[in-house]
Amino acid sequence: MSSKNISNILSDTQQYFEQQRDLFGNIIYVDRPKKDILSHEPHMISTDEAWAQSPSLEDLNKQICTCMKCPLGQTRTNFVFGSGNRKAKVMFIGEAPGADEDAKGEPFVGRAGQLLTKIIEAVNMKREEVYICNILKCRPPNNREPQLSEMELCTPYLSKQIALIKPQFIICLGRTSAQWLLQTTESLGALRIKVHDYHGIKLIVTYHPAALLRNPNWKRPAWEDMKMFKKLYDELNV
Image 1 (cartoon, rainbow, N blue to C red):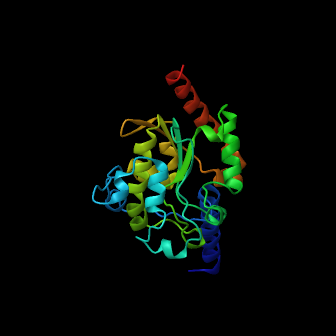
Image 2: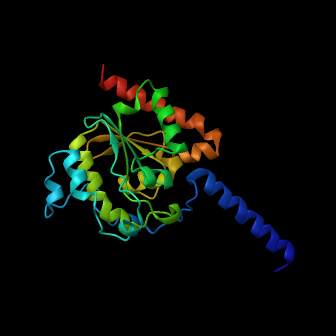
């Protein structure tokens, strides 16, 4: 192979990874075999553990905040349970805490979180009205991609949160959250501009705020996602 061909391959590879970074942040996603991503029942809640009987979010947090089921418990600074209205009609769900969230113990408090607040306010809602959390409750080291085993262990906690809150809408922030909850390998582009059903809850997919910070051109389509959500929300809450 000539040096020119090698140079072209390296250039194309660099462009691909830059595009992936812009779309998904510092995490690089690879396609997984469908049998792997569909390896769990996303709404299953084990009844064999005490936390599954928690009557409130506060009690649930107390029951699980010392969780050490996976190695992330050993590397976290803080357990990031979630925050917001206990009776929220809207839940925003990301993939995992970052460094700022790990330090403070609250979801979406860094630059991406500040943008998320503005997005919520842009549809005439307040952050205090909604509930915000992630699939994982602990930060993966160096913000790496959540592993399947980690998401499988943490998903019952998320399912319990959803069961306690009983939202009308779930808004998935980014591809990982959307693919995992919907148990699909479809792309972010294919999942957007649709209303999905998640165990009777309307689910909408949009960009992760971190991706919007890296590529402002995606703010307009993200706004279209939020306008679609708000129209449906208003129709249900006249």
